[in-house]
Length: 53
Image 1 (cartoon, rainbow, N blue to C red):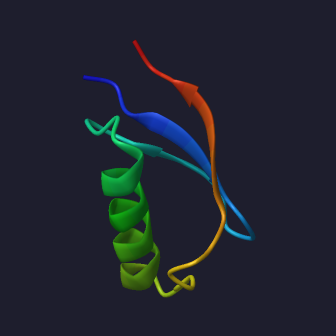
Image 2 (tube, rainbow, N blue to C red):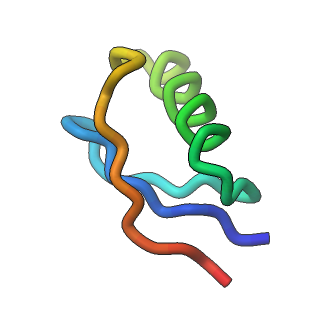
C-alpha cells in the first residue's frame, strides 16, 4: 500500500510508506527525524501533499 506524502515544516518532504493514517504518519515522521539527528517538536506542522494509490 502506498503511503502519504507529507511536507514537514522546516524539514522538507517525506513519504510514509505503508501508512495512510495521518496520526500514524505523524508519529512515524517524528521518530524518523529523531533517529537521523534532525528532531522536530511534537507540534510541528505536517501538511498532507498527496496520496499514493
